[in-house]
Image: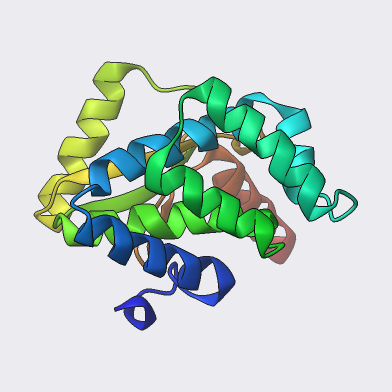
Length: 186
């Protein structure tokens, strides 16, 4: 199953696949996904937690103690907490973001959903998010889960990656195209 999708490969993919199979067998896929989404949000909100997760300077024991406190405070338990603790014990906590992304892809495939990575210059309104979901559903025939990233460097427009297809309608790309055309003409 994991080999079919390039987003579910490597160390993170192997861990995500094992977690998915465990969660599926325990009929806890949605609960595990919710806990991992909450942990991912904590990583985004806290540079200190991100540093703890990514830095090889911290010992496994120090990471484990800090992680246990974070999980307890966030109310993350069960399979997701055990998964994060295993990553820590095996010195693979640095791969947690990739594992969460791969787990989401496995869940989407399991539920017959598609997942799209969307990059925008500024946050989209709920109305625009729904319009984008509707447009992508028309293309794929599936419900589409959006992973939205805000990147002011694209200036405007958006970049949508759906599986191996990518649509780049960002202003930065259009300006670069014009710049290259002008250089070739001149």
